[in-house]
Every structure is written in structure tokens, then in C-alpha cells.
Image 1: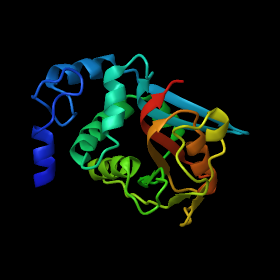
Image 2: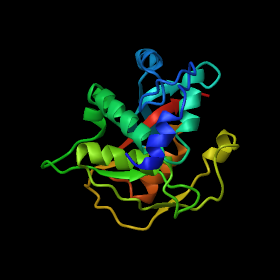
Image 3: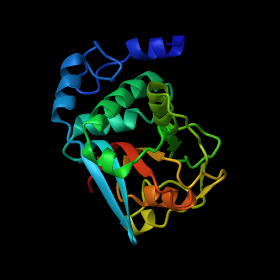
Image 4: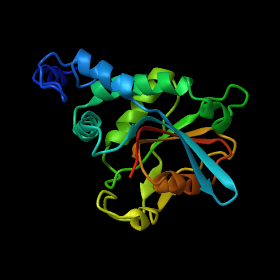
Length: 218
């Protein structure tokens, strides 16, 4: 842990109750356990013509009903959150192993490890939260990571309506083998538009799967 992260961690308060006994999750032990116990994992399906894109989200997030999760999602977007992302990446992997959809959605042949590809930020040079999430997943699993996607549509999706989100377009600056298992990583998914755009930009890989920290239910 770097000096800044050490100071940042021990100078924080729990996102939920405000106490100073903060763990890497950004919550105290009681609030962390409460959030993890109340989590609703979400297996994801997005139809795309004749194909079906599958994925997994560790939380189902309803913004006006889950204050703790809303605060977590917002705080993880800040800088110097690598320790927190490491904790939630580990939790997501543990939940993923219990999900049957991984077995049907990602079929690894000949022991080939999947490539982790993070959702791109609006600024292609910036390593944002999806990048750090994918990085930590890679460190925990040994799976390689490639940041090879770039947004064509300008600006953030934050204030777009559903139709606007569906207009997302991505391009890949590196070719991925058709039979290479691919895991697309994002922090939050809503309509699946970015996941579908990544699927198309990567040439419709046969083994394509999505991992997200949270599925935002609108």
C-alpha cells in the first residue's frame, strides 16, 4: 500500500455509518457484512439478433433503495481506490464461481485463459475505474488484460436516456482471435449497450462474457 493510499484509508470514515474503523471495502466490518449479505447477484442476458450475450453482476443496484451501494459506486470512481477495487474484485470472483451462467456463457477450450478487456473511458489515455477493476481481476486470477477499446461516441453516458445509451459505438485498436475467450469488464451496466458495442467492436468473439460490479436497475 502506498503512502497516499495509507493516509487515504485511515483518514476515511465508513460510507454507511460514519465510524472510523474502515476496512478496504470502504465500510466498517458491520456495514460491510450487512451489504454483502443483502447483495443480489444478477445473471445477465442481452439478446443481440440471433446471439445471446451473457454476463454477471455482483450487485443489483437500485439507486433510490440502496444508499450504501450508491455511495460505494460513487466513491469507487475516485482516484487512489486500488485497494478497495482489489477487495471488490475478490468478492466478485467468489460470487462468479457460484454463478451457473459463467459455465454456459464462457467456454474455455484447451485451458486457454480468457483476456480481460475493460470498458474504455471517455478519455482514452485515462485509466479509470473499469480499467482498475479489470487490472485487479487479472492480478487475482493471472488472466491477461488488454485495454484495446476506444469510444467513438463523445461524452459520458451519465445523463443520457435509454435511447442515447443504445447509441454507444466502440472501436478496437487490436484484433482478437475469434476463438479467444474474452471477458468484458465494467463497473456498472444498465442497458447492456456498452457490452454489445464491445462485442461488435471485437468481431463477435465466440466466447464473450461480461463482468460488472453492479447492474443498475432503472
